[in-house]
Every structure is written in C-alpha cells, then in structure tokens.
Image 1 (cartoon, one colour):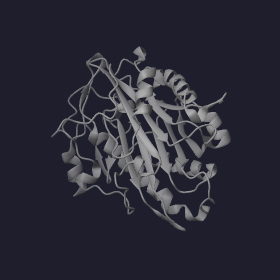
Image 2: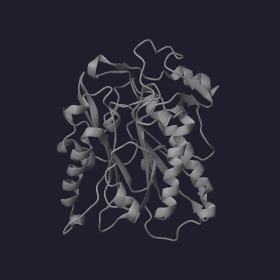
Image 3: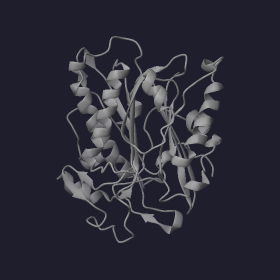
Image 4: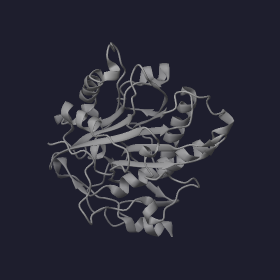
Length: 349
C-alpha cells in the first residue's frame, strides 16, 4: 500500500469534467484550474491507499499556506446532518478560526489521521513551542467498497498527502479520501470547482472541494438519472439511504467567522441541487475558511454573488467527482458503476 500522491490517469484514459461536456452551471467565471487551488495560498494533496480487491481508501489534505495556532485563519462550519465524526468542530465553531490543514479520510481512519496531523504540525517551524492545537479531520464511510475495519490509512500516508500538497490542477474521482466513496447511485470520489464572483470593492475567488459519498437520486440540469436509466444498473442495488458529504470551501474574500458560517451553510444547501437525500445516516458538513485574516469584512448585503458562486461551484464539484470516477469492484465483490458521460451530454443539449 504505497502512497500515491496526486495519481494521474494513464494517457488516453482521462475522463471529461462537467464543463468539458458543455454543462455550465451559473454565470460566474471559473478560476484557471476550476479548482479550490485557484484560491491563492491553498494547496491540495492526496494519498491513495489500495490493496485490491478489499481496500480502496486514502486521505486528502487541503492546506492553507502557513496556517498554525500562531497564525489561524477565520473559518466557519455548518452541519446539515450530524451523523458523522468531524474532529475539531467544537473549537472551530467556538473560536471561528482554523489552525491546521483540513484532512479528509475514511470514518474509522479519522482518529489515526488526526493524531498524524498533530505530529506533523508539531514538527513545523511555525509551531515551535505550541502546547495545544485543534486538528480538523472530516470523514466519509467507504465501507461499501473498502474493508473499513482494516483502518488502512496510516501516519506515512497522512504525511505524504501533506508534504506533497501542491497548487494547480487537482486530481479527482477515485483518489485520496474519495477512492472508495459512492454517491447518488454511482462511483464518486473527490471533486472540485471554483468561481470568481464580483463583490463590492472588487472581485474574489472561491473554490470548493467535495468528498462525495451520499444517497439520493442524481439530478443534472433538472433531469433525473439513475444507474438503471443510463444502462449500468444491472448489479445489486446501492443503498440510497446512507452516506455523507464533506465540503471544504476556501476564499480570498475578507470574511469573518460568522460570514464564513453563512457560506458553509450554502455549500450544504447546494447538495440538494444534485439530488441529495440528507438521510438519517448521512454526515453532511461544510467547512469554509478565508485566506485573508486581515481587512474589513465584506458587508453582509454584498454577499449575494459569493453565495450564488458557492452554490454553483458545489454542484459542479459533485458532478466532477462522478465524472472523474471509474467503475470499481471492491470489498465483498461489490461493484459500483461509473457515471457514463453520454447521458450528461444529452442533459446538456
């Protein structure tokens, strides 16, 4: 189970993203990579952990530059449905600051990942003398396709994701924390998107990254798509009433913690556009942070374009997570099909 930071598909096998298929969501332009890394000072790293057929897991790191307990960034968190193990949420809510990278992984690996994140942080030069810090780790249950009880994500995988985190294009689909996840009846994974809305006083960038693993029925531009309707539903049905989604939102707009909580709320709301069921067993969370800890916050009355941009970016990121994923056979011989692009091409017509 060697760490595989930012694995890329083999030549000729890359799948198209939603925008490549002509699916344009919302009026705002994207950043250059249409990814959370379009926000200056934000990097992403993945470590994919595979031992076919039983293990399909990993860890994903969203890393704001130089974040530490001595240099926290303003942040907010919103819980759509709290059936989850989001580590660090109470202090994040209480203080409105983020002081570590945000890591995503599998449910039963979350606690090992948090411990590894603490160890990595304490060795950073900017954490010299630190005696307390609040690791933030989100999770989704990848037990449908991966042997979750094996807890295959270890310290070396966490450190690889953090150390290899980079800007630029972000690998999507069956990678990192999304290696074994399933959403809306299809194989899913990591997805990302960005927008550059105009706010009062100038423009800004907002980027999102999703770990998609939630139930419901996929909707694309108002059209409902199921595995059976697109010709890939011959296997055993996938439970529609369980799952989760972790959403990370980054922006360079100068927002305070209260405003970032409002942003996080919209990120969870956006899942409804894609057909999310928000079921009893779903842990649906969003964490939003700003890379601008100084400066006067944007007036609340001027936040409308940013809210709309977040809704659009989350919807597109979920679609990207589905389109980038590949059909996977995993634990117990269960197979989850990828979403074929042709039905989305038809929906875009």
